[in-house]
Length: 311
Image 1 (cartoon, one colour):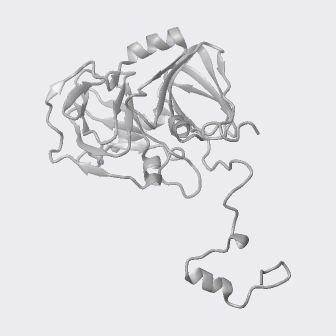
Image 2 (cartoon, rainbow, N blue to C red):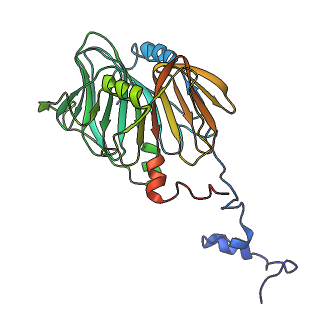
């Protein structure tokens, strides 16, 4: 006989279900589907100046021998979160001092770095190939490629890392391995590596085109866009499913997003706009340029990119 709203379940029925790892679909503890998205992560801005100050202080007590990477993770400030910047991406500011190396490793997540400050003699080593780094460069290290860093200049090197670690964690496909050598040996050098997108070329192209997508062949889960906004020029993206991290590469940019309001950002500053938050970007005084890092390719490939948007 079917249970009705007026017929209570037998004593101990629900307890017995729980013992067998069952849960009654008609009496869920909380809904598992809902009428519209419930975004968890919040918009947040991080300042390059704050990161520089903190990383510079950390040199006194954190070596690259002690730490896999001397970096500051941009942790989204939601309760219980200890790592992701947004649902599928994480970003971090990193410092490598003169004479230091950051050991070679490889992992299943995809990674890239936006170089902020660097002098000749700083490079990323990718599968034995030396890839030099200069300010404004974007250097890719696709999944499962050996990569380490070396600073043989006389100046500190700062950059911003972006990885899809949270996505890989959710997929339960995390693999990580140290190279048998602290830093993989240099087998060759390629200043024009297809993994290196020169900052000067990106800046020139984006001034001409406004929005330049790149890295699609190497980054299957991360979308990259160099964007130029003239003074007062605006982008007003509607609320959408993908998560976006913007790092200012030149000039001044303003972002308007609740609950932050209107925030002005300069070179090296980073803002995250998680899914379903409407926002706008505008060029500040003199205009500005940004790197957009997004998980949009994930939703496009899975067919979720435009689901429900007609509602």
